[in-house]
Amino acid sequence: MIDIIHLLPDNIANQIAAGEVVQRPANVLKELVENAIDAGATKIKIIIEDSGKALLQVIDNGCGMSQTDARMAFERHATSKIKSIDDLFSIKTMGFRGEALASIAAVSQVILKTQKLGADVGTFIEIENSKIVKQEAIAKTIGTNIAMKNLFFNIPARRHFLKSNASELKAILEEFLKIALSFIHIQFELFIENEEKYHLIPGNLLQRISQIFGDNYQKKIIPISDHNDTINIKGFIGKPEASKKQRGEQYLFINQRFVKNYLLEHAIKTAYNKLLPEGHFPFYTIFIELDPKTIDINVHPTKQEIKFSEEKWVYNVVQAVVKHQLAQFNVLPPIDFDLDPHIQQLEAIQNPQHLNYEKLSNQNLYQTFKQQNQAHLIEPLQTQRKQDWDDFYGSLHNTSLNKQGNTVMELNPNLQFDIEEKSILNTNAPAFQINNCFIIAPLNIGYIIVHQQYAHERIVFERMSKKLLKRKIYSQKLLFPSSIQVSPTDQPIFMELIPELSQLGFQIEAQDASNYHILATPTDFPEGTEQDILENLIEQYKHFNTNIHYTLKEKLIRCLSKSQAIKIGTVLSQPEMMALIEELLVIPNKHISPAGYPTYFIYGDQSIEQLFEKKI
Image (cartoon, rainbow, N blue to C red):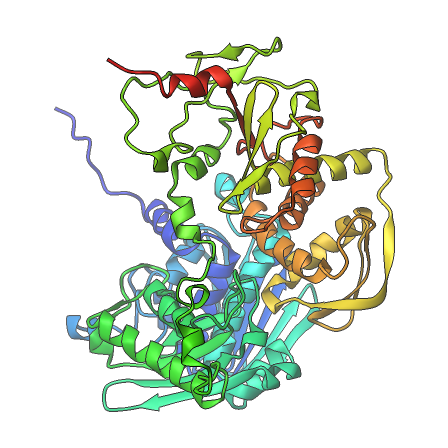
């Protein structure tokens, strides 16, 4: 009998472990800088080339390592921070798992130069594929200089999954800013392609925020502070005018460690109540200090997820502190005690009409339009009796028309149909909206139900594609140029988009590191919307950028069509509804939105009549 179970070689085991710790260059930066912080560094210099793929180097003035420690640091589970199981539940350092350097050395070429305080000479180590290929004594200043080169050189498949340079650089900046905000007593220098991007000198938190986000933020943020025997909270939160459509400027730290915790994010967001516009997110940099024994940070290798022993209590405290500070600085709207009490009893006040997105998203009709890539899904007629009128529109069976105008029933579920002309619209009868989302209009042979946002996305997409194909996109100069502020982490993405945006009719110039002037827009852009559209564009592009099936220009057009389209909740006039349907029915690919959702459904007269036939 041949034994088949064996131990993995160290280099293979390290590569497997690296899959959890090192997924992209940003992960390497986080681990190396955290090691420098744990070494007591007061100055940290970071050098980036080719978005960290070719080189990511961290130089610090920390305590350095001895020759033995330098070799041991690259062994799996080698750490100076954990000696007993009790230490695991009272962690106050950044790194502690002992996996980072071993994982990095398994998927890259590493060069380490280090010298410990009091040592006569330093140590040089070169590692490749987890193996030390060179080691020698060198003369060096106190501290550590570690360089990671050619990430995933020995795992080409992993390198293939890295994103564009702009996306990887954005991720690097995100990790850098998290650390820079947390350790304000440390001087940080960040060089990207031999150009100094940041030079952050030690100071207080407000000064560090100003260095990163701009001096104008001092007027847009307010301090928060609360201290007791159990929890300490401090930091800054943004006024409503500092909110943005991007989530990027939200930093939450537990015991100086950046964490992701959706519960606390929800607590902060709800503390603003209705102060923020729909789709906007508040700025905040909040530090929470708790007894390390009440939290668990060892739930994920990246150490960015956290668990609390008393989650509900922490949630309530954070929400109360943020809400209190907003009220203290007169950000919350005041209560008008002079308002006539009879006015408060009016129906419009007690039950205001508004769009309930959560309720709408649960309706059958809305879900029908969310069937991606299944335009005009046709299902067989059900035989059971309909129970009530509330589900009438949601339970209509999808039926279509053939080119002769006859009703098509109980056909293949994937059948798609076409409408050759808009003449089938009954222009003598009115159209109407449901929940300011769906348009129902009469046809000469039935009814059409249109999703106004998906339909308009397709219309805008076809307009821009046609103009771009014919090179007939023209710009209109703005009488008063508007400005857009881009967060530091989004700048690589935006800089990548500017040349493509210029071909689509935009003219954008950089004012400083984070502010840009919009000098011109495409001729058919609604005046005054350019800032909102570009902010939406950046946010959508970040999520859409991973799709490799489209060119950069196609991705941009798709994002712009979604940004510029009529949104759910927009009230349309009768002429606007009819014009949208008429234009939709004569364009190519009218059946689906650019994202693949159906834009309309048609119900023939016979199919509606059959709903009311007696079923025995």
